[in-house]
Amino acid sequence: LDENIARQNLIRILERAKEHKIFVRIDIEGSPYTDATIAMYEAMLAEGFTTETVGMAVQSYLYRAEEDTRQMIAKGTRIRLVKGAYKEPPDIAYPKKADVDANYDLLTKILID
Image (cartoon, rainbow, N blue to C red; front, side):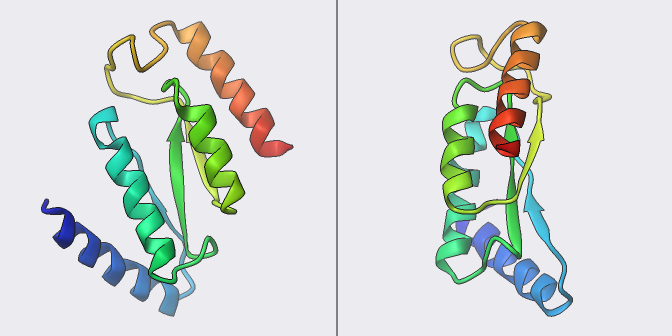
């Protein structure tokens, strides 16, 4: 979708969810969309929606996940931690399941602490 259309649709969804006291979590797709998805989330916070209304998912198989998690924690984001389900190149994501699992454990500890 066009980014502006997606933004307007998300605003409509969040406004309606707020009316009904429903929490919306923005899911995360493949790495080509990670920056845009996080930017859309941050735009929703700038629009006045709160972390009580909207949250994010973080994929632990991405090398950037720890930094993203820490930045979101600083904003009070309610995070859904996932391992990741897309085939990603080894320069941006852990290629071995054991490494993904270890990073998932690290991020879980960060979230709990």
